Length: 299
Image (tube, rainbow, N blue to C red; front, side, top):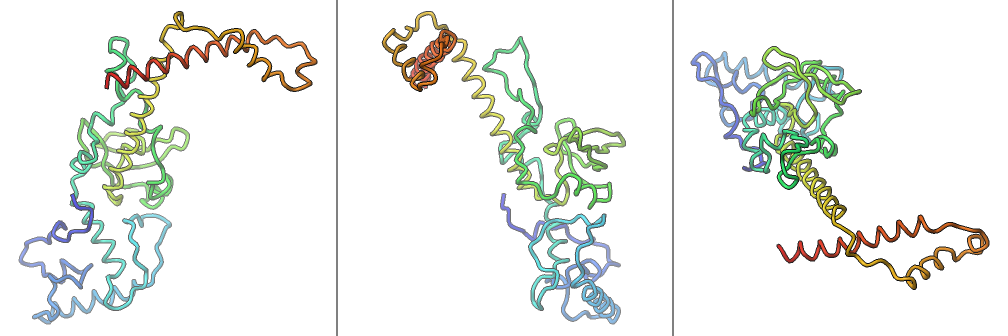
């Protein structure tokens, strides 16, 4: 799916006969759908009014006191003639985001409803068949974040429209607040209150493609971590009875190098515990070499 803005995907105005194109596109009077020369005097008056209102809003700074949550656009507040006004760019991107199918975008990035579920450990399931043991939020890359959690709530005035996973589908919800102690958002869905992590919420003004990349990166990080845990567990569980110990010459060489300083040579040190750890590390290393060789040969 293309990530560029496609105006054909934007919501079309209502087909009601009483609504003129000037009213339908008052936020974008530069649209080709709006006639440059309105036929009726009433449409000319409306066009002049909307253009005057747009001129008054040009140059106004973004109000961050609340209720001003909008998509991120890289357009100056004061635009030169012939360039897309900031207000128009924001509205275009808002409608573009609203026209996207979040479920399909996530599927294109390899993220499904099963990815969002943490299964945990189950003694009845073999280790190699266990997936999603670790919480997905542990692997969240916050460099994808558009605002801080408290900023989402502040800019949305405590009523931030979003989507969340519910019964295996992404449905509309309203984000009400954020608890810094638990790092959870409180949402309202179907009249009920619930808590969600950041990765379980896609805000309406958030880029769905970036959100999909964020989830995919977290899922890949969790998969890698769980693979390393299994790998090290397999190596640690290998028997060491048949692994040969270090010979006396190797042990003496290790002790000599370890006690090379004069201060250690003059003091009496019990090296038996350290030598036991060295023998264990040596046996594990030998097992790891054997495991890697068999793993490579089996693949």
